[in-house]
Image 1 (cartoon, chains in turn orange, yellow, blue, red):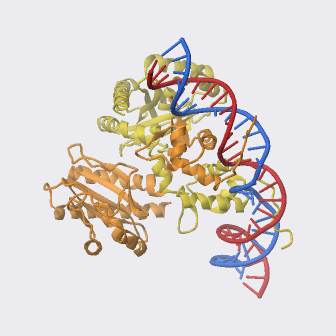
Image 2 (image 1 turned 180 degrees about the vertical axis):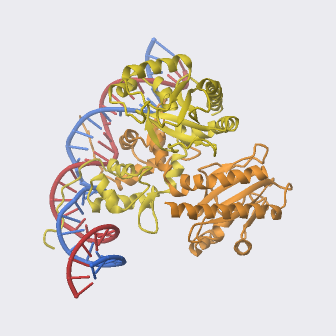
Image 3 (image 1 turned 45 degrees about the vertical axis):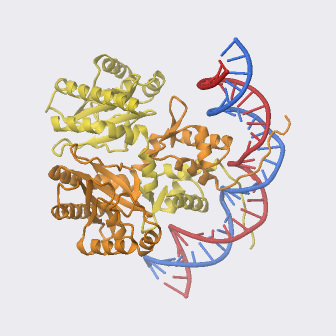
Length: 258
Length: 258
DNA sequence: ACAAATCCTTCCATTTCCCGGAAGTCGGGT
DNA sequence: ACCCGACTTCCGGGAAATGGAAGGATTTGT
């Protein structure tokens, strides 16, 4: 048994390391093997193996027939309790469906998390422009209709953080000039809606509006995404704003109801 | 500093204790304070406080303005990666909507987790019977349409476990006799659909059918829930079975596509 | 058919990081 | 002013976590 067991000791908080394993999963990597997870988190195989065992036993992860780890049903159940995720989604869904049926276009619902947009729901007309976002996915705050609304009403600190860093470009029309973006955000605050004209893809245009909670705080945003050239932002904005206000009211109701 | 620090040492795996804090949350308790969480998990305040701090920093939990802990958006994002949760839901949704529009009744989608049903989606006709289940919620395997289907195709071990323990009663028509239930399950396997007639509430009846994966394994179930007396199970069963088979095919397609 | 490579699982001596009682802080109620 | 409950911070001792290595299982290449 020469050299068996050479402990170097813990290198960080245990719970955090366990969570780091969960954090390795994402829309692009929904299933991973032990060694992939160990590589991505930078921890030794045996350590990852033990922690993953605990996560599987609890139900946070599951192993498929090939032995790969996937996100478990238990974690999904927990996620369904998130007020800004499933909770928001359920309250808003009827209104989003109305908006979708009236316009026959893509409808999106999103919230801000840090300096990114997280999409909470997306209902798509089958004939509508294909959208590259997906539920549970993230995107930059600067280019989409929902993103512009959420950024315009974000705390100054967040705005400066975003405006201070390099603005990512997606198309030739993406706004990457900080001052120009600043003026756009001011417009969003004054008008009560945002326009993202071919800033994400050259064939799409989106119009977003803010959703407020019972205290008037902007907590989410709705948007319509249409093919460029099929409809003017100014015909879309009243629809989106009306829908957003209906959802805001529903949220306030729900808050009182418990 | 008399008596400062009397360590008694860890009492269990750290990661598991962190997860125990998450497990304290549920549909009936979506928000809790520090002391409530400590009580429910049986851990000292200071320990709970420290672990909760880690969970909040990572984004698993969030604190609302009153200081209560809630499930965070980050956890919802992770949950959206669960193949048997959001993954299944997204693939099945178009078919469930068709079924809902044709029948104007409640449609439910569920999977089995241990000896319980977990509801993955529920679309309700506004005029349909109110159903007491909710997305992300659990229920006994023995009484609902989806539950009977999932139990009928569960491993023998699970069936014996359920049949061996006392069967919960919800109404006067709930089947609580093990032998009678055994015969019902045999019928479900032969017929290809299940009937739960007023077994959950006296005003509702549900008909369920199995969804199979690409290898023929039963991985989920669909059901229609209607008010008792408005429709016969035998007119509903073809609809549910057709929908279930369409979803099964869609799952197999998706598997090949990746 | 054999070897090499890759992946997964188990083991255990050595520490390191976690535990939790106690004290401090804050806010509301009497 | 005082009490009470809920939350936050502190720190010494000790239990639980760590990770290299060995061995098994599976796949790939020749």
